[in-house]
Length: 288
Image (cartoon, rainbow, N blue to C red; front, side):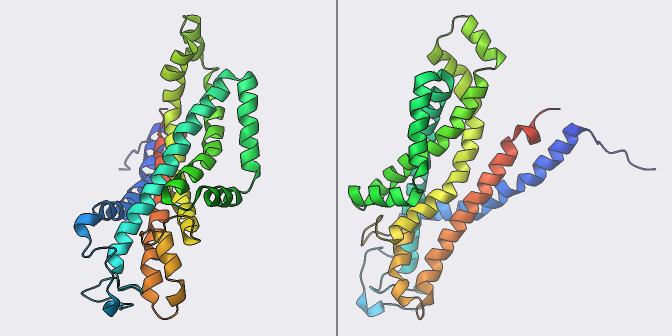
C-alpha cells in the first residue's frame, strides 16, 4: 500500500526551510568555537601576546608553540587568539553602527518623505558614488590609524547601505492598512514608527546585518593590513598577516594560521547570513 505524503504548500515550505537552515547550523558550528576561543583568549592563551623572546624567533609549530612563533619570538597561537578577538570586535562594531543609524535614517526618510527624504537620499547617493575603499582610506588616514577610528569610519560609511534597505521597507509599510488605521485613530508619527514600522523591519535588517559581518571583518582586516588599523604591538588578524609578508616563503605558518582563521570567520559569517535569510524569509517560512 502506497503511503500518502503531505504535498501541501505549507509542508513543502517546512521541508524547504529545514534544508536551507542547514547553512545557519553549519555556519554556527564553524564560527562558534572561534568566537568563544577569541573572547576567552585571556584564559586560553598559553603566553603573553606581547612577551618578546628573541631566542625563540620564527620557530615552526611544535608541542610548545602550536602555531609556531613570529619574528620576535612571540607565541603565534596567543597572537591569533587576541587578534581574532580584535577583528571580531571591530566587525561587530561596524555592523552595529551601520544597522542602528542606517535603520533610523532610512525609516525617517521613507516614512516622512518630502524634503527629509530628498536630502537624506542625495547624501546617500554622494557617499555611494565614491568607491568605498577610497573614502575609507582617506578618512582613516586623516583621523589617524587605530582600531577605534577604523570602526567609526567603516561603520559610518556603511550607513547608506542599511539606510537604503530601511527606506524601501518604510515606504512599503506606511501604506499598510494597520498603519493607516493607527493614524486615523490619532496615533502620533513617532508612536506609529516605534510600534508599527520598526518592529516589522527587524527581520530584514537582521538578515542584512548578519550578511554584512563577513564584509566588515574582511574590510577592517584589509585596512589593518596596510597599516591603518591596529598598530604594533597590538594583535589583529590583518596586522599579523601584514607582519608575516617578509617570511611567507620560508616561515609558512606565520601567514597560514592567521589567514586561515580570517577565512573561517568570513566563510562562517556568510553561511550564517544565508541561513538567517532563509529562516526569516516569509516566502519560505510563512503560513499557507
